[in-house]
Length: 198
Image 1 (spheres, rainbow, N blue to C red):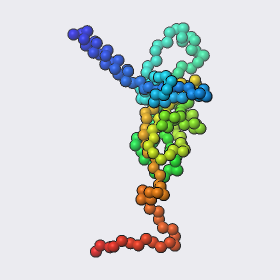
Image 2 (tube, one colour; image 1 turned 180 degrees about the vertical axis):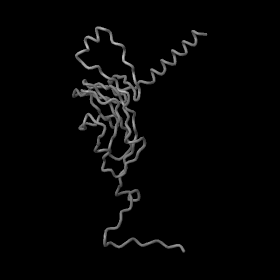
Image 3 (cartoon, one colour; image 1 turned 30 degrees about the vertical axis):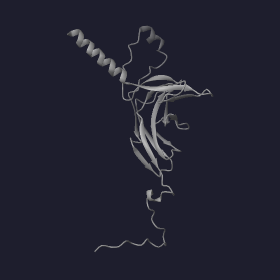
Image 4 (cartoon, helix red, strand yellow; image 1 turned 90 degrees about the vertical axis):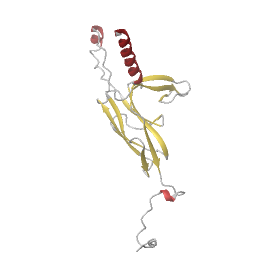
């Protein structure tokens, strides 16, 4: 009875540990540029990440490793990387192809680490690599997926946020019924009122 109970507990722990890892794919293009994506690509290799909102207790260092690491500060694992804006299924209307992105990272970003945003599986270049507020331009009409990654000095991902889906809508001259009706310009005749019910 004890042996079967111990086996059941061990299987449960292994299942939880396996489900807590997020999978990412890494590949190098013809120009030697390293890419990361949550979708498999030809020639890509899998990278296992610590998933969002988890905490791993560091192993107890040995005497030799403590002595070798005295010159370098110990790395602190991240507890939380939360992408809270845009919200899931948020809709942007006539935003000038621009969205504001907000993150929460706990603890703070470590020296030498960087924050990268990925839009539809591709890294958004030209953004700051630190901070918790970003503005992404050139986001076109349609539904998009966004997530964030913390990368170490070598560019390897350390932690990834959850993915958020959002939709960008824009008024179209071909579909004026979808756009909000504009107020008449000063001095222009007002639209005729409909029949009044008494």
